[in-house]
Length: 109
Image 1 (spheres, rainbow, N blue to C red):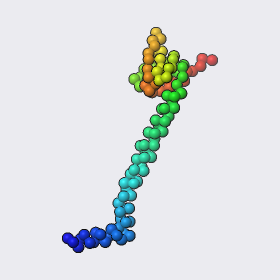
Image 2: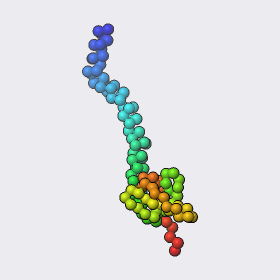
Image 3: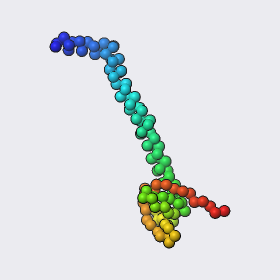
Image 4: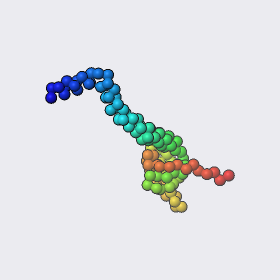
C-alpha cells in the first residue's frame, strides 16, 4: 500500500501528471463555455432588449400585458401605466413591468 502512495506522488510531480489533470478538466471547462454561449448570453441579450422596450413606452402605444390584455396607453406616471381597453374605453392601471409586447400605432393617413 505504501508503494501505491509513492507511485501516485511520483506521477503527480511529473510533467505527464499535470497534463493528465488538464485533460481531465478540459471537458468541464468546455461545458461551462458552451453553457455560457447557449444559455446565459442569449438570456442577457433578451433581458436588455426587454428593458429598452419598457423604457421606450409612450402614450399612444398599443401594448399587450403578460396576462394577454391588449390596450392603448393613455397615461404614464413613473412605473404606472393607464391603459384604455375595449369599445367602452375602460381605463385600467398596470405596472410598467407587466407589459409583454408593444405595437406602435398605425397612422391613418
